[in-house]
Amino acid sequence: MTATLYNHSLSPADAPAADTARGPCPVRSILIVGGGTAGWMTALTLSRALEGQGVAITVIESPTVGIIGVGEGSTPWLRGFFEGLGIEEAEWMPACDATYKCGITFEGWCTKPGFESYFHPFASMLDNLTMTQFVHNVESRINGADVEAHPDRFFIAARLAERRLAPKPTADFPFDIWHGYHFDATLLGQFLHRQALGRGVRYQSGHVTHASMHESGDIAAVHTREGEALTADLYVDCSGFAGLLIDKSLHTPYVSFSSNLFNDAAVAMPSPIGGSIPSETVSTALKHGWAWQIPLTRRYGNGYVYSSRYCSADEAETELRTRLGLLDADVPSRHLKMKCGRVTQHWNRNCLAVGLSQGFIEPLEATALYFVQKTAASFADVLIRGSLGEAARQHFNQQVNEHFEGTRDYIVTHFRTNSRRDTDYWRDNAANPNISEPLQKLYALWMAGKSIAGGVREQAIGKGYPVFSWYSIMAGMGIFPDPAQLRPPTPDEARYRMPEIDDLLERSATHFRDHREVLAQIPPRRTAPGLQIYLW
Ligand SMILES: Cc1cc2nc3c(=O)[nH]c(=O)nc-3n(C[C@H](O)[C@H](O)[C@H](O)COP(=O)(O)OP(=O)(O)OC[C@H]3O[C@@H](n4cnc5c(N)ncnc54)[C@H](O)[C@@H]3O)c2cc1C
Image 1 (cartoon, rainbow, N blue to C red):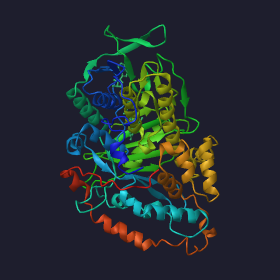
Image 2: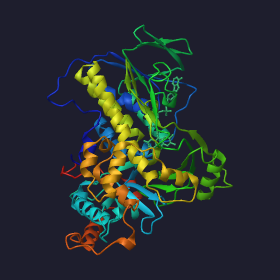
Image 3: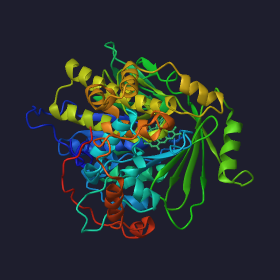
Image 4: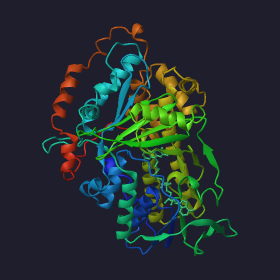
């Protein structure tokens, strides 16, 4: 797998593999219920994939129910979404107050000296030069050798974030640096809406009340409060947590993640941003959850994700305001409820669910839009292949479910490995027995000082996050023997010299510029050199 995978996979322009049959599109009309980010991303993905085939795509959106309006961080995969549509950063980023994201700093999740903070980087081609050293040192340290194994020391993205540099190298730098984005969720929704209309997607305002069903159990029509009955060959549920079609009409069974992930609420509010813009999300552990801080060009987006079992909405808001210095400020807050889990069938009968209606994993790693992108792109692939049969459906649902489970397990690891003991929330998370079997196996391998790479690649757990991310989280959370138990490394364990790694990263960092400077003149797209990278 290569780093270029990020920009070329899951892009709306993806065609099916050459060895697969390409049939006529089995649907002539698609009705998407919901005009949030999921609705518009799906509309754009399908319209691009089915271009020229005369398939009518309509988005219907309630005039009275708003979009969720949060969700301001992405993974690097979003780059592939825009590139597949031929939309340049110079076009969409300024329209959405967007900034570049090198990764996420996790502050205060661990109390062990030296590990109070760590950075989860997006992997880049340059990391080929330091990934082996990182994994080697981590494996040496879990076996008791006193070697450097903190992830921040090994990855270029951490250096860039530390210096608030944009992940856009000068033209003489041979490696493409991978990155995600931060953006204003409302502006992004509006931008995607305009793009979709420009590409022939139809829009209708209307409040959906219910769906009527065929005797077979398929959806026959979607009915609106305005008295219309809308029919289509395929219905896409992008109605958010309401799940109007996939849940309320089709009653698709739901798997809750509430025993694995405790958070079910959030409070969000903006704060001013100064002259210099960071190139990272910061996620800070608070008393009963964690706070995000996301830099946009004109403000910070902040939020506190917490568990209502452990604190009230008022307590959460007060804690967040105090932290931001906004206790007495007239800054409006938004309170949200979240439901973490997934439906068992994202494609059920003649309905596909995309976005919050299909499921949600709490936003700690900002993965939700990636699920939207992946679900929509995979379904476009199904349509292009031309078969909507049972085998295709089962395969599709299994793939999406594995992606959900693998990602959930990664997020669970943040909570399960925390070493805070200051509140019941953190103590209960650390003691939570509800962890999946693959995760238990992975922890057992780690604690036995063995490599986890094979285990990650072979199981669903690797469908969520690549090998290096698993090493980063376990090492970043300081899951190592106590410092007092460490012994001097053998010559083999000490074979990589940190000054050389430092020097490489320092010299590399000189090829990057201040984030705001880069944003003022977004550089033209560079073609990735296409070097192999050790990612999965
Ligand atoms: C606290 C929090 C933080 C998040 N942070 C991130 C993040 O950093 N990164 C990330 O990728 N994701 C994040 N997410 C998730 C992200 O916000 C969503 O995945 C994304 O916005 C897509 O939402 P959606 O389109 O599925 O739903 P919504 O935005 O809720 O849109 C639902 C749509 O359905 C329509 N609708 C509803 N009822 C009806 C009806 N009866 N008739 C017609 N239309 C109807 C609405 O009008 C709306 O257009 C976060 C979520 C939460 C809760």
